[in-house]
Image 1 (cartoon, helix red, strand yellow):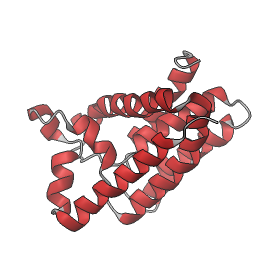
Image 2: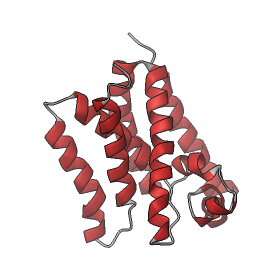
Image 3: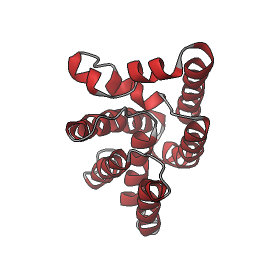
Length: 175
């Protein structure tokens, strides 16, 4: 059996950062400094990485970590922790870079692991033909259903991440 520590470590790191964000520092200032927003263009380049570890609410981190646990464990077992870690981190960073284009149209602060998690879903959809349709439905639901209920979500990061992951699977980056 392969080591399944990367997923657990990322979940623990997200939870530790959430604790700092909400119980040690000012959540608004913390999320503006570490989230991905227009400050990136003024030299806050760390945001492309740190935004994956900042969450907007308890429900936001709870839902992200449940999905990360479920799909992260599957893919970490399949790829091994090194390849899985590369897919998660670099996929999340690429998703962040591509999501910067949305900032040209809207002033937003992009926070959360959803983009990196969507990379995992896209990769899994590519390599698992049996579950592909279901995963496409899931990404569409989590991207657009909250909008219909008036909840702001980074739908573009979800779709971009899914596409990045699918492309990585299609190009057989890790196979």
